Structure formats: structure tokens, C-alpha cells
Image (cartoon, rainbow, N blue to C red):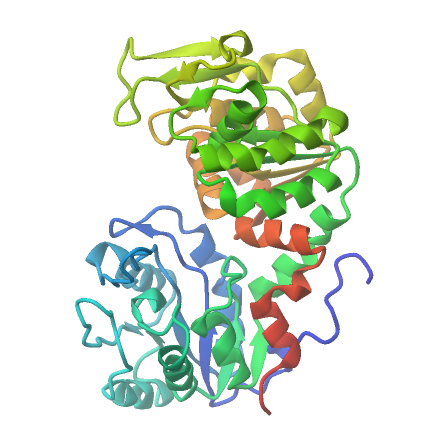
Length: 434
């Protein structure tokens, strides 16, 4: 397929007849933490789709997930105010000249919202008549069926489909197959939104990169990233790791115990260590920040350590950041400076206490203005904006830079070799019933 072109099987919002239709729009506005918007970029990125719906005469009902309300161990769903979509709706009211209605549904203290309340029908009537500009449903993960299997999931998908005439997915960052991203797309005529199209068009830049290709990946979990990490390793010329990923790799490579790294993850990382013995693609970051605690940044209780300190059998306390001096070393600086494509899904330190490593990394990458600089993921974009606002703002207008709204989605596309096997995108290829 030609670079930047979409698969012709993908049904686009431009192809849908929206006039007078209620449009169920799945977005990824997962930007709220403790009741406040961290960074509105992912909201702003969907404005084009909202305008397209308005221009076509459509009436939008929005939905997104926020946070992780479901307890993995107990299955209990907590509808916490800090994970409400209310701040998002209020932001949209300020951004657009519309009134946003948030329906209220009764919630079970253990199961969350078990059904769509019939009261929404009057709100939909008001939406059709233009009395309100849009409806924003409660956090999709407050609904019992969103991440469930079986009858609860089927009931939610049927209920959501009953609200609208069309379904549009604009949630590139929500790549998992849940009721609101996948099941409902099979029950309504379904289309890709403007943002989703833009993200898919730009994925060729990491799937078919100009070389040398450098990737920087960090994360709080290792076990969930093994597949994408191995696939990325095969594609890159150089790989820089950070966060718990780098800690886990170092623990496996040097035979040390690092606080916060499980023995299970350490064993899993052994495969990457073996791979790199011959590949030698993982860039060594020679100095790290070790802290006695992750609860606070206490003078005298954290220090910079080097690779020589990682001797076999030793117990290392929490590694909370990469020492910014690591990015000043010639080997690392040269690798970044000579890259033609740089993909970044990484916050290097334990935020907000330890930020210097991330800031040094972003400034180094920002200095290579000749490279395609591709940042991905909510946390990455948030910290780039917070730590290096000048670099962030310049990237918004630079065709060499691109900000993907979903880091996990890019890694999944890299692992699969195509974005068109991600289940929510796959559902749009089928298009739903006519």
C-alpha cells in the first residue's frame, strides 16, 4: 500500500450519510486524573471529527473510558468522582459553542452501571431537536458490560447501539476490543473518524521508517510489553529503554535484585538479554538514580549510580530515573543526532518526583530537527509538554514531528506489522450492518 494511504476497505466518516442522524462517537478522552484534566491534547485532537459530524448534520453522543475503575482481583467497579467525564464535558462546552448533556444512571456499588437508564430517551429527543448540542455518556468503564464477557457485554452493546443511527470510532488509543470499541461497531453502520484516519495514515512512519531508526520505550510494566518489545527490537537500529523496563533488563543482565522488579519479570527479560548479546541494539545508559523510597524525594536518600555498582548478587534500591548525564555521553548523543526516525513512548523517571532524565532525553531528541520525531501516548505527550513546552509547541507545527494519541496502539501495530488487525479497526473494515 502506498505510504500514508488508508486501506480502501476502511469505511470513513466522509462516506456516511449523517444528516439528521444520531452518531455514537467513541473517543479516547482518557485525560482525567483525580477529577482534573492532565493535558487536553487528546480532546483537542478529536475536534475535527466533531466538526465533521456537525457539518454533515449529525447529532453526536460521545463516550470514552477514564482510568481503571474495575478492580482486577475482585471485579468490583467503583464509580469514583475523580474518574468522571464531567471535566471533559465542561472543557468541550468552553471550546465549542454547545451545551453538553451528561445523563445520570443508577450504579450498583459492586457492579457499576448495569443498564442504560430509560431517561436517556428524552435527552436523545432533545438532541435530535437541537435543544442540546451533544450528549456525553458516563465513563464507559463504569458500565458492567464494557470489559465483561457474555450476556452483560452483549446487553451493553445492544443498549449502546439502540441509542444511535451510526457509529464512529475516533479512539486510536483504545485498541483493546471492548463493548464500546468493538462489539457495538458490528451492530450499527460504522465508520472511522477524522483523527483515527490521521493516526493510521501516519503509522507508516514507524512501520516503514527512514533509517537509522531509534526507538525509546519505557513503562511501568514489563510482562504486558514483551511481544511489542521483541517486535520493535527486530525493526530498530537502536533501542533505548527506561523506567521499569530498563530496570528489569538490567536486573536480568547483571544478575542483581532491584526493588520493584519481580523475579517473574526478571526471568522474562532474560530472552531480551540473550537477543541483545548478538544484536547489540540496546543503548547502554550508564548512570541511573537510586532512591531509598518512591514516596518522596528526600535529600541524602537518593544518589547517582553507575554500571559498576550493578554487581551480581547485590540488592539495589529503587531505580527511579536515568541520570541526565547519561544523555550527554558521546555514544548516546551521536545515536540520537544521527537518527532519521525517532519513536518515543517513554517517560524515563518516576514522575513527578524524578523528571531530569525525561527532560534531558526530550531536549536531546528535540535538537535533531532533521529526523522524523514521533511521540506516542498520553503520559509521554503530557510530560513533553510540561518539561519542554517550547519543543512540544514547535512540534505541533512541524511536519517532521507527529504526536500519536495512543502509545500502546502504535506498539501493537508494530507487533502485528499492520494497524488493520487491531480489533476495533478490523470492525470498521467490516462496516457493520447497512
